[in-house]
Length: 342
Image (tube, rainbow, N blue to C red; front, top):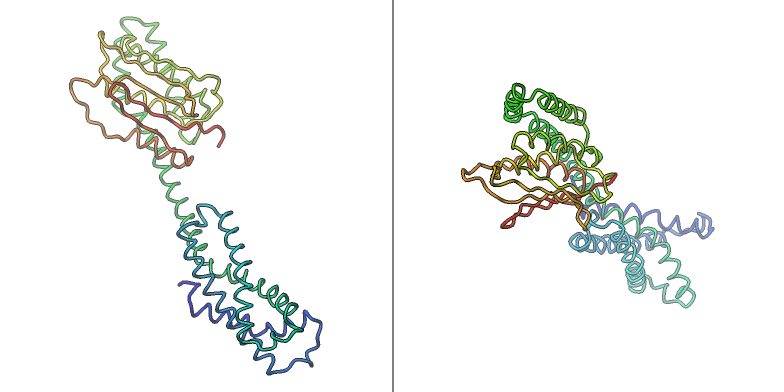
């Protein structure tokens, strides 16, 4: 049920108008015995018409502002515009009604003092009218905000679960255990180092599965271990250049870099004649830029886009800044917003 309807506006104008004459008398310091019923009825009727006029002007004004300057987009600007409108339009409406309907205003004694008094009195009511007219919009914004937070919270939980599932996928385990099995008989020392790195990777994933953000330095330490595994698996045919330029204390969602590198490995050819070049660096515009050469495999690999969507959903929950994804002729680039300590 809408609060701000024409019927409700008229009823509220009537509620404000009836006691207005009594309130004005008390402010002036008069006694109740000096009040005349005819004067009370006349004044209250004029106040009622003025308030109806204010209600309709504020309603029309709010409908225009809702299209050009919404409460959600810029609340400070909206408050300023509402206040300016109230201060400018209220005296115009009050003076117009007083001149037309209240013959006593023409008397010299009420010309300036009367208008000033009535306009100051009306401004208080006009600000209350502005609040009432915007009640529906503010309630809808509040409901929308609550709903958005609930949706984002659900998306965040799904993203976290998706990230964890991506890291512990059977395919990932199968590849690493195959490499480990081959190393045990060929190079036991390297197999031990491989197993230690694999253990630390899973420890990192499990320790941070409920964390929204981790230090970039921690993520880089984790990704170096992951690159160590890939280096053994692909005979050192993956070259990854990491340049943080002193910005290691910023934040990033955990395992984000691992997903991007895993995508690069999945979709590009890596062989003895073609190594895969990857770079991770801080861009001048404040993003963590992950770039890899494009060298598609001869046999096409179907892309579900789950990994990139997972990253985008997590960033959507954490910040208004967006993940930038671009694919050129020779390179694929993902730019991740650096979140500092947001």
